[in-house]
Image (cartoon, rainbow, N blue to C red):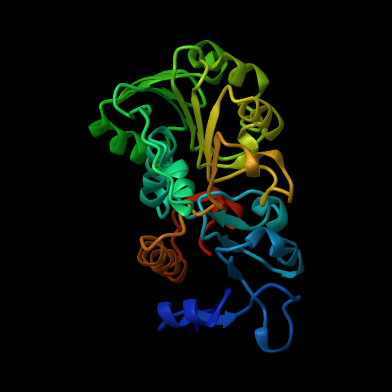
Length: 317
């Protein structure tokens, strides 16, 4: 007789959208706000909520025989630690790439062309035409060459920019030269826009700090659609509030910014509330990924996007 694995879903709608589940899987709804109990039974796999998953990660430690955790985000900050080394963890790499890349382009255009200021002027019926920077002819320093980075580079090509790519190590790939992080300060001095799509980890935390920001030319634009802690908020705030640099950021550290933080009112800052992947493209793409992941689990195959192998080092789920 086939063993039935129980997978929890963060809300009834997601379970309904993915039902019927493949044979061998049983779905339950668990919002993770309380310890699993009652009729939830023994949970083997957990699909995390998309919004505010970090707030409920502690509940993973209350699942006694956890084997698999699936995020709905590309980032997986703290998930492996919360799940423990015996559980496999997969992220949603690829699901958010298109939407996040297009937001990065939108933020660049909005800040460079003064669209954010035009919105403020419209509220007071003020007509203030002035010559702004174009995206055309800018030199873009792109930090991160994974899924989102590739989509962003592809979208920037028609805008007639020069792109310099920075990855975890210096190398040459199919798209050309990739610079290493140790070159950042030198590279920053020759670029008009620095855009980060990086995840946060031990190697990227505050990778863009005082030295890198100070090296950017006056008036340069800093864009972040990856993770807030990759860029030092303190250093960025200092440069933006002084008026030397501009920023257009979808992520920041901490999130949300505390009330009264200087970036809220800085004229040179444009802030969106971490909505890079939260667009109409999200739902069909996450459902497609989750369906594939559930089918792999039911078939005893290794799911995609593993960032921690867990039991899949030894064999099937």
